[in-house]
Length: 561
Image 1 (tube, rainbow, N blue to C red):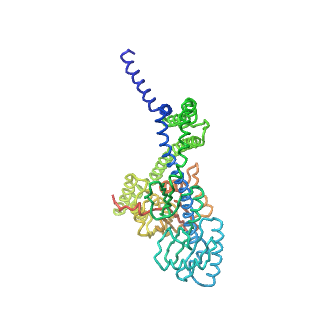
Image 2 (image 1 turned 30 degrees about the vertical axis):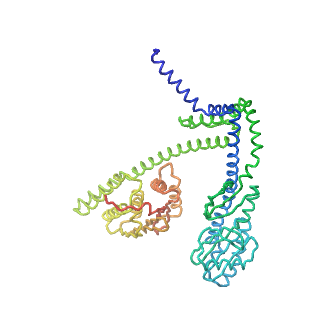
Image 3 (image 1 turned 90 degrees about the horizontal axis):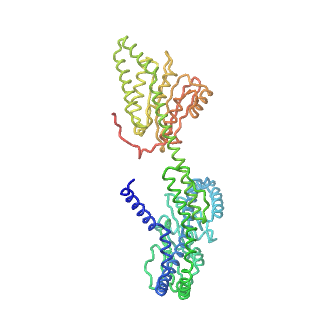
């Protein structure tokens, strides 16, 4: 390589090194340390002002963090109270009987059981100071107050609130001369709720903050105005939608600033002497773990999925970072394998499905039927079979989706049964019953068609009329299709073997059609989707296909093309 070509490369390396040096944290840390050698007087003045601002900011942050901690605990109590009340309203067996508001002897007994079951539960959880249920029809109040106030007073208060326009959800209120967060939930015939006293929270928070001049209060609005020497801090309670405000004197925070000022003078001299030691400590405690983490991220970014950080961290924060990186790397590796296996599984499933549909005996039987009908001169029947065959392959090969709207599947099923009637004259009767919503449901192509074809293949007997029924229902976000016949049926052992082969595919490929159908269904709709088979000898077979479905998201008009 000539000298002319080497020069640009060397210059590029120098520029890269300089850029890296300037942007490096090590360089920035060193520059910050060197700032300690600025003229002493300027440094002392600047540090004193800075220290005052820092003390105020630290006080604000400390108060803010303490307030946030208490409000987080309050939010947790509120959220837990709502959950417990919901359980009380809908899941508690005694509560369900009480809420029916029968007013009979059973009601009185269940009311007592309900009260003590809930009292014991709330005594244990300690998340709310009081709870109640107001049964409007009976004008009856069931209440419990952990502060040991009179239940009669509670009942009077709740009725008074019911007579007025009480706001729903959590709100600020004064109950028995105590400030409280109050919850009212009106469900029509029943109002239920509770409250949490806030004065105890304020007392505990004031003790923790340890400021003599601090004033704490709850308000619907954030306090923004403050006097010149006041420090105002506000925290928002998300669930209660109100604010906790704190006001304290700045003089109490900065009263010892002069002593701190003298300490800073001495510290500035000591810090200059300790620069090399401090720099080495920072390198060891802060910068080295960062370099380890950055190097591991670079290796992972370059495709090394086996990269893990094995070095022990020197602080709990970096230990958490190292553990998070290792968990992330594990998850990325697992996801990559999972996605790869899922894609292979999907392609194999689609291939198996196509292979199952294009069966030689199916084509041969259909062509033989066409030939026989043509010999007999049954032209209309020949046309019907050919149209069905055309629709079958058009549906099979034009469907580029995993799911197709049910009306297309139903059209093909009816055409197939019509063709089967031509093949077995007078041996098949079919009926269909669908909920209106079923027309907009999407199903894996030919999934239901395959079960109908099985009936024709195994249940039809010449000289006997076999009834085929297909029922489609939609209820509560669940779709169910039942494909039934009244043929010879199966024994209990045969049903169990078929079900086992469907859920755990056999190596010999027996019953692969059922196994593939279940796999396709769960691929599209998750583990809640299922296929159940029921039968008795001489009573026919019923195949029930169920899966979750959201019409709000999936609804789409029928397109015949």
